[in-house]
Image (tube, rainbow, N blue to C red):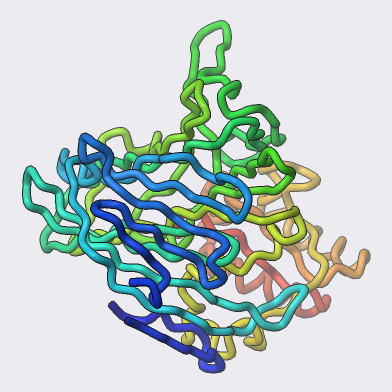
Amino acid sequence: MAIPKHFPLALLLILSTGLAHGYTSTAEELRLSSPNQRLSVNLSPNSDGRLHYSIQGADQIVLEPSTIGINVDGTDLGSSVTLAQPETRTIRETFPWLGAKNTATNHCQAYLVPVTHQPTGIPWTLEVRVFDDGVAYRYLVPGTGTRRVHGESSAWSLPPHSRAWFQSNIANYESEYESAAPEAIPLETRSESRSSKVHLVLPVTIELKNGAFALISEADLENYRGLVLRPTGTRRLEAAFPFDPEGWTVTGPIISPWRVTLVAADLHRLVNSDVIPSLNPPPDPQIFPKGPHTDWIRPGRALDTWTLFGNDGAQWHRQKWFVDQCATMKCDFLLVDAGWRTERWGWLADGGDVWARLRELCDYGKSKNVGIIAWPPNPI
Protein backbone atom coordinates (compact mmCIF):
# COMPACT_ATOMS: atom_id res chain seq x y z
CA MET A 1 0.00 0.00 0.00
CA ALA A 2 1.51 3.30 -1.08
CA ILE A 3 2.11 5.93 1.58
CA PRO A 4 -0.01 9.06 0.99
CA LYS A 5 2.03 11.97 -0.32
CA HIS A 6 1.80 15.54 0.83
CA PHE A 7 3.81 18.61 -0.15
CA PRO A 8 7.58 18.40 -0.58
CA LEU A 9 8.01 19.96 2.88
CA ALA A 10 6.13 17.08 4.51
CA LEU A 11 7.93 15.23 7.25
CA LEU A 12 6.95 11.57 7.24
CA LEU A 13 7.72 9.01 9.90
CA ILE A 14 6.45 5.46 9.55
CA LEU A 15 6.90 3.00 12.36
CA SER A 16 5.61 -0.46 11.72
CA THR A 17 5.21 -4.02 13.09
CA GLY A 18 -0.15 -6.70 18.13
CA LEU A 19 0.17 -4.42 21.11
CA ALA A 20 3.11 -2.28 20.02
CA HIS A 21 1.24 -1.57 16.81
CA GLY A 22 -1.80 -0.05 18.50
CA TYR A 23 -4.21 -2.99 18.32
CA THR A 24 -5.27 -5.99 20.33
CA SER A 25 -7.30 -8.97 19.16
CA THR A 26 -9.43 -11.64 20.77
CA ALA A 27 -10.94 -14.31 18.53
CA GLU A 28 -12.82 -12.36 15.86
CA GLU A 29 -12.65 -8.92 17.55
CA LEU A 30 -10.02 -6.28 16.82
CA ARG A 31 -9.44 -3.23 19.00
CA LEU A 32 -7.72 -0.49 17.00
CA SER A 33 -6.36 2.42 19.03
CA SER A 34 -5.30 6.01 18.39
CA PRO A 35 -1.72 7.18 18.98
CA ASN A 36 -2.53 8.42 22.51
CA GLN A 37 -4.72 5.35 23.23
CA ARG A 38 -7.68 7.55 24.25
CA LEU A 39 -9.82 6.75 21.20
CA SER A 40 -10.40 3.21 19.94
CA VAL A 41 -12.40 1.25 17.40
CA ASN A 42 -13.79 -2.21 18.10
CA LEU A 43 -14.22 -4.14 14.87
CA SER A 44 -15.87 -7.57 14.67
CA PRO A 45 -18.49 -9.69 12.90
CA ASN A 46 -21.61 -10.40 14.95
CA SER A 47 -23.06 -13.89 15.44
CA ASP A 48 -24.43 -13.80 11.87
CA GLY A 49 -21.13 -12.72 10.39
CA ARG A 50 -22.24 -9.12 9.79
CA LEU A 51 -19.30 -6.74 10.18
CA HIS A 52 -19.74 -4.01 12.82
CA TYR A 53 -17.60 -1.32 14.39
CA SER A 54 -17.97 0.93 17.41
CA ILE A 55 -16.00 3.93 18.66
CA GLN A 56 -15.05 4.40 22.30
CA GLY A 57 -13.67 7.66 23.66
CA ALA A 58 -11.76 8.15 26.89
CA ASP A 59 -14.91 8.58 28.99
CA GLN A 60 -17.87 7.77 26.77
CA ILE A 61 -19.20 5.81 23.81
CA VAL A 62 -19.08 7.81 20.58
CA LEU A 63 -20.69 5.21 18.33
CA GLU A 64 -22.55 2.05 19.32
CA PRO A 65 -22.06 -1.05 17.10
CA SER A 66 -22.70 0.08 13.53
CA THR A 67 -22.69 -1.90 10.31
CA ILE A 68 -19.95 -1.77 7.69
CA GLY A 69 -20.17 -3.07 4.14
CA ILE A 70 -20.11 -2.26 0.43
CA ASN A 71 -22.45 -3.85 -2.13
CA VAL A 72 -20.67 -4.88 -5.34
CA ASP A 73 -22.59 -6.54 -8.17
CA GLY A 74 -25.44 -7.33 -5.80
CA THR A 75 -23.27 -8.84 -3.05
CA ASP A 76 -22.98 -7.15 0.34
CA LEU A 77 -19.34 -7.74 1.15
CA GLY A 78 -19.92 -6.77 4.80
CA SER A 79 -22.11 -9.80 5.46
CA SER A 80 -20.89 -13.30 6.42
CA VAL A 81 -17.27 -12.21 6.81
CA THR A 82 -14.14 -13.31 8.58
CA LEU A 83 -11.23 -11.07 9.56
CA ALA A 84 -7.49 -11.62 9.58
CA GLN A 85 -4.81 -9.80 11.58
CA PRO A 86 -4.20 -6.28 10.29
CA GLU A 87 -1.10 -4.75 8.84
CA THR A 88 -0.30 -1.69 10.95
CA ARG A 89 1.82 1.44 10.86
CA THR A 90 2.06 4.81 12.53
CA ILE A 91 1.82 7.90 10.33
CA ARG A 92 3.27 11.16 11.56
CA GLU A 93 3.67 13.97 9.05
CA THR A 94 3.15 17.70 8.72
CA PHE A 95 2.19 19.73 5.69
CA PRO A 96 1.67 23.43 4.89
CA TRP A 97 -1.77 24.90 5.54
CA LEU A 98 -3.68 28.12 5.00
CA GLY A 99 -5.85 29.56 7.75
CA ALA A 100 -5.37 30.08 11.45
CA LYS A 101 -2.15 28.04 11.37
CA ASN A 102 0.66 27.47 8.91
CA THR A 103 1.07 23.73 9.40
CA ALA A 104 -1.37 20.82 9.66
CA THR A 105 -0.51 17.48 11.27
CA ASN A 106 -1.40 14.00 10.11
CA HIS A 107 -0.78 11.71 13.09
CA CYS A 108 -2.65 8.42 13.30
CA GLN A 109 -2.47 4.67 13.60
CA ALA A 110 -3.19 3.11 10.21
CA TYR A 111 -4.59 -0.40 9.81
CA LEU A 112 -5.17 -2.60 6.77
CA VAL A 113 -7.67 -5.25 7.88
CA PRO A 114 -8.04 -8.26 5.52
CA VAL A 115 -11.69 -9.28 5.14
CA THR A 116 -13.12 -12.31 3.34
CA HIS A 117 -16.74 -12.65 2.24
CA GLN A 118 -17.21 -16.32 3.04
CA PRO A 119 -20.06 -17.28 0.66
CA THR A 120 -18.12 -16.10 -2.42
CA GLY A 121 -14.54 -16.18 -1.16
CA ILE A 122 -14.10 -12.56 -2.30
CA PRO A 123 -11.21 -10.91 -0.43
CA TRP A 124 -11.16 -7.19 0.29
CA THR A 125 -9.54 -4.79 2.71
CA LEU A 126 -10.97 -2.38 5.25
CA GLU A 127 -8.49 0.46 5.68
CA VAL A 128 -8.89 2.17 9.05
CA ARG A 129 -7.12 5.22 10.42
CA VAL A 130 -7.53 6.13 14.08
CA PHE A 131 -6.50 9.67 15.05
CA ASP A 132 -6.54 11.14 18.54
CA ASP A 133 -9.61 13.14 17.41
CA GLY A 134 -11.32 10.96 14.85
CA VAL A 135 -11.79 7.69 13.00
CA ALA A 136 -11.93 7.05 9.26
CA TYR A 137 -12.35 3.92 7.19
CA ARG A 138 -12.71 3.07 3.52
CA TYR A 139 -13.33 0.01 1.36
CA LEU A 140 -10.59 -1.39 -0.90
CA VAL A 141 -11.94 -4.06 -3.25
CA PRO A 142 -9.35 -5.44 -5.69
CA GLY A 143 -10.33 -6.52 -9.17
CA THR A 144 -10.29 -5.75 -12.88
CA GLY A 145 -12.94 -4.92 -15.43
CA THR A 146 -16.12 -3.00 -14.78
CA ARG A 147 -18.31 -3.69 -11.76
CA ARG A 148 -21.38 -2.02 -10.29
CA VAL A 149 -21.48 -0.57 -6.81
CA HIS A 150 -25.05 -0.71 -5.50
CA GLY A 151 -24.40 1.26 -2.33
CA GLU A 152 -23.14 0.61 1.16
CA SER A 153 -24.38 -0.73 4.48
CA SER A 154 -22.24 1.86 6.29
CA ALA A 155 -24.08 3.27 9.31
CA TRP A 156 -23.63 5.42 12.40
CA SER A 157 -25.50 4.21 15.51
CA LEU A 158 -25.41 7.11 17.95
CA PRO A 159 -25.47 6.73 21.73
CA PRO A 160 -28.50 7.73 23.85
CA HIS A 161 -29.12 11.43 24.50
CA SER A 162 -27.36 12.49 21.29
CA ARG A 163 -28.55 15.50 19.32
CA ALA A 164 -27.96 16.01 15.60
CA TRP A 165 -27.49 19.28 13.73
CA PHE A 166 -28.32 18.76 10.06
CA GLN A 167 -29.87 20.11 6.90
CA SER A 168 -31.75 18.08 4.32
CA ASN A 169 -31.61 20.04 1.05
CA ILE A 170 -29.65 17.55 -1.04
CA ALA A 171 -30.42 19.44 -4.27
CA ASN A 172 -28.06 22.34 -3.56
CA TYR A 173 -27.14 22.32 0.16
CA GLU A 174 -28.74 25.75 0.57
CA SER A 175 -30.95 25.37 3.60
CA GLU A 176 -31.07 26.22 7.29
CA TYR A 177 -29.69 23.74 9.77
CA GLU A 178 -32.11 22.01 12.13
CA SER A 179 -31.54 20.24 15.41
CA ALA A 180 -33.20 17.08 16.71
CA ALA A 181 -32.49 13.83 18.46
CA PRO A 182 -31.54 11.38 15.69
CA GLU A 183 -34.57 9.17 16.45
CA ALA A 184 -36.84 12.23 16.06
CA ILE A 185 -35.63 13.30 12.60
CA PRO A 186 -38.61 12.91 10.23
CA LEU A 187 -38.40 10.18 7.63
CA GLU A 188 -40.46 12.07 5.03
CA THR A 189 -41.55 15.54 4.10
CA ARG A 190 -45.08 15.95 2.79
CA SER A 191 -46.74 18.47 0.52
CA GLU A 192 -50.23 18.49 -1.00
CA SER A 193 -49.13 16.50 -4.02
CA ARG A 194 -46.32 14.24 -2.86
CA SER A 195 -44.11 12.97 -0.10
CA SER A 196 -40.31 12.78 -0.25
CA LYS A 197 -37.79 10.81 1.75
CA VAL A 198 -35.59 12.88 4.03
CA HIS A 199 -31.84 12.70 3.52
CA LEU A 200 -29.18 14.55 5.47
CA VAL A 201 -26.30 16.20 3.66
CA LEU A 202 -22.82 16.10 5.08
CA PRO A 203 -21.46 17.15 7.41
CA VAL A 204 -23.81 16.19 10.24
CA THR A 205 -22.73 17.43 13.66
CA ILE A 206 -23.61 15.43 16.77
CA GLU A 207 -23.76 16.85 20.27
CA LEU A 208 -23.02 14.06 22.73
CA LYS A 209 -24.40 13.57 26.22
CA ASN A 210 -21.46 15.06 28.10
CA GLY A 211 -21.23 18.18 25.91
CA ALA A 212 -18.57 16.80 23.57
CA PHE A 213 -19.11 16.70 19.81
CA ALA A 214 -18.81 14.33 16.88
CA LEU A 215 -19.06 15.09 13.19
CA ILE A 216 -19.90 12.71 10.33
CA SER A 217 -18.44 13.44 6.91
CA GLU A 218 -16.39 11.93 4.09
CA ALA A 219 -13.01 12.60 2.48
CA ASP A 220 -11.17 11.90 -0.78
CA LEU A 221 -14.27 11.55 -2.96
CA GLU A 222 -13.11 10.46 -6.40
CA ASN A 223 -14.56 8.05 -8.97
CA TYR A 224 -17.45 7.37 -6.61
CA ARG A 225 -20.76 8.93 -5.59
CA GLY A 226 -21.37 11.49 -2.89
CA LEU A 227 -22.70 10.21 0.42
CA VAL A 228 -25.79 11.42 2.27
CA LEU A 229 -27.39 9.96 5.39
CA ARG A 230 -30.86 8.48 5.81
CA PRO A 231 -32.63 8.71 9.18
CA THR A 232 -34.36 5.53 10.34
CA GLY A 233 -36.58 6.63 13.23
CA THR A 234 -33.94 5.26 15.58
CA ARG A 235 -30.54 6.52 16.69
CA ARG A 236 -29.08 4.89 13.56
CA LEU A 237 -28.17 6.95 10.47
CA GLU A 238 -27.55 4.96 7.28
CA ALA A 239 -25.51 5.63 4.15
CA ALA A 240 -27.64 6.52 1.13
CA PHE A 241 -27.09 7.44 -2.52
CA PRO A 242 -30.49 8.74 -3.64
CA PHE A 243 -29.28 10.09 -6.99
CA ASP A 244 -28.04 6.62 -8.02
CA PRO A 245 -30.82 4.14 -7.14
CA GLU A 246 -29.42 1.61 -9.63
CA GLY A 247 -25.84 2.09 -8.47
CA TRP A 248 -22.84 3.15 -10.56
CA THR A 249 -19.98 1.46 -12.37
CA VAL A 250 -16.32 1.42 -11.41
CA THR A 251 -13.56 0.07 -13.63
CA GLY A 252 -10.62 -1.59 -11.93
CA PRO A 253 -10.05 -1.61 -8.16
CA ILE A 254 -12.84 -0.06 -6.09
CA ILE A 255 -11.62 2.52 -3.58
CA SER A 256 -14.37 4.23 -1.65
CA PRO A 257 -14.07 7.67 -0.05
CA TRP A 258 -13.19 7.74 3.62
CA ARG A 259 -16.13 7.48 6.03
CA VAL A 260 -15.15 9.94 8.75
CA THR A 261 -16.24 10.48 12.35
CA LEU A 262 -14.53 13.37 14.14
CA VAL A 263 -14.56 13.52 17.94
CA ALA A 264 -13.80 16.66 19.96
CA ALA A 265 -14.36 18.02 23.46
CA ASP A 266 -15.70 21.32 22.08
CA LEU A 267 -16.56 23.12 18.85
CA HIS A 268 -13.22 24.93 18.70
CA ARG A 269 -11.35 21.64 18.52
CA LEU A 270 -13.91 20.23 16.10
CA VAL A 271 -13.56 22.96 13.47
CA ASN A 272 -9.76 23.01 13.80
CA SER A 273 -9.29 19.26 13.36
CA ASP A 274 -6.68 18.20 10.81
CA VAL A 275 -8.26 14.79 10.18
CA ILE A 276 -10.12 15.55 6.94
CA PRO A 277 -7.24 17.51 5.34
CA SER A 278 -4.95 14.61 6.25
CA LEU A 279 -7.22 12.10 4.49
CA ASN A 280 -7.54 14.08 1.28
CA PRO A 281 -4.82 13.89 -1.39
CA PRO A 282 -2.35 16.77 -1.69
CA PRO A 283 -2.88 19.46 -4.33
CA ASP A 284 -1.84 18.59 -7.88
CA PRO A 285 1.71 19.97 -8.18
CA GLN A 286 1.09 20.96 -11.80
CA ILE A 287 -1.69 23.31 -10.69
CA PHE A 288 -0.33 24.14 -7.22
CA PRO A 289 3.47 24.04 -7.64
CA LYS A 290 3.99 25.65 -4.23
CA GLY A 291 1.08 23.94 -2.50
CA PRO A 292 -1.12 26.41 -0.61
CA HIS A 293 1.50 29.10 -1.19
CA THR A 294 1.19 28.97 -4.98
CA ASP A 295 1.37 32.52 -6.32
CA TRP A 296 -2.06 32.63 -7.97
CA ILE A 297 -3.87 31.84 -4.69
CA ARG A 298 -4.78 35.27 -3.34
CA PRO A 299 -7.41 35.79 -0.63
CA GLY A 300 -9.58 38.87 -0.97
CA ARG A 301 -13.05 40.39 -0.88
CA ALA A 302 -15.41 39.35 -3.66
CA LEU A 303 -18.81 40.35 -5.02
CA ASP A 304 -20.98 37.44 -6.17
CA THR A 305 -23.22 37.96 -9.22
CA TRP A 306 -25.95 35.89 -7.55
CA THR A 307 -26.35 38.27 -4.62
CA LEU A 308 -28.28 40.94 -6.57
CA PHE A 309 -30.09 39.09 -9.36
CA GLY A 310 -30.07 35.45 -8.35
CA ASN A 311 -29.28 33.15 -11.26
CA ASP A 312 -29.85 36.00 -13.69
CA GLY A 313 -26.75 37.64 -12.25
CA ALA A 314 -24.73 35.44 -14.64
CA GLN A 315 -26.17 37.28 -17.68
CA TRP A 316 -23.34 38.30 -19.99
CA HIS A 317 -24.60 41.87 -20.41
CA ARG A 318 -24.27 42.47 -16.66
CA GLN A 319 -20.69 41.32 -16.15
CA LYS A 320 -18.79 44.54 -16.89
CA TRP A 321 -21.30 46.45 -14.78
CA PHE A 322 -20.49 44.08 -11.94
CA VAL A 323 -16.77 44.72 -12.44
CA ASP A 324 -17.44 48.45 -12.16
CA GLN A 325 -19.30 47.89 -8.89
CA CYS A 326 -16.37 45.84 -7.57
CA ALA A 327 -13.99 48.65 -8.41
CA THR A 328 -16.23 51.20 -6.69
CA MET A 329 -16.51 49.06 -3.54
CA LYS A 330 -12.80 48.17 -3.64
CA CYS A 331 -13.52 44.46 -3.97
CA ASP A 332 -10.60 42.33 -5.10
CA PHE A 333 -12.64 39.86 -7.14
CA LEU A 334 -15.90 39.30 -9.00
CA LEU A 335 -17.35 35.83 -8.61
CA VAL A 336 -19.31 34.94 -11.75
CA ASP A 337 -21.81 32.41 -10.42
CA ALA A 338 -23.03 29.20 -12.04
CA GLY A 339 -24.75 29.35 -15.42
CA TRP A 340 -22.31 31.47 -17.37
CA ARG A 341 -21.39 28.63 -19.74
CA THR A 342 -24.94 28.11 -20.99
CA GLU A 343 -27.00 29.77 -23.73
CA ARG A 344 -29.58 30.86 -21.19
CA TRP A 345 -27.47 33.69 -19.80
CA GLY A 346 -26.30 35.15 -23.08
CA TRP A 347 -22.65 34.19 -23.16
CA LEU A 348 -23.22 32.37 -26.47
CA ALA A 349 -25.56 35.01 -27.95
CA ASP A 350 -24.82 36.41 -31.40
CA GLY A 351 -22.35 33.63 -32.11
CA GLY A 352 -20.25 34.45 -29.07
CA ASP A 353 -17.55 32.10 -27.85
CA VAL A 354 -17.77 31.51 -24.11
CA TRP A 355 -14.00 31.38 -23.60
CA ALA A 356 -13.37 34.47 -25.72
CA ARG A 357 -15.93 36.33 -23.65
CA LEU A 358 -14.40 35.11 -20.43
CA ARG A 359 -11.05 36.43 -21.68
CA GLU A 360 -12.70 39.73 -22.54
CA LEU A 361 -14.15 39.95 -19.05
CA CYS A 362 -10.79 39.09 -17.44
CA ASP A 363 -9.08 41.79 -19.49
CA TYR A 364 -11.72 44.31 -18.47
CA GLY A 365 -11.37 43.30 -14.86
CA LYS A 366 -7.61 43.67 -15.06
CA SER A 367 -8.05 47.24 -16.30
CA LYS A 368 -10.07 47.94 -13.13
CA ASN A 369 -7.77 45.93 -10.83
CA VAL A 370 -10.53 43.36 -10.27
CA GLY A 371 -9.83 39.63 -10.59
CA ILE A 372 -12.41 37.25 -12.04
CA ILE A 373 -13.43 33.98 -10.39
CA ALA A 374 -15.70 31.79 -12.54
CA TRP A 375 -17.90 29.23 -10.80
CA PRO A 376 -17.64 25.95 -12.75
CA PRO A 377 -20.45 23.42 -13.05
CA ASN A 378 -20.08 19.93 -11.62
CA PRO A 379 -18.92 18.01 -13.52
CA ILE A 380 -16.82 20.59 -15.36
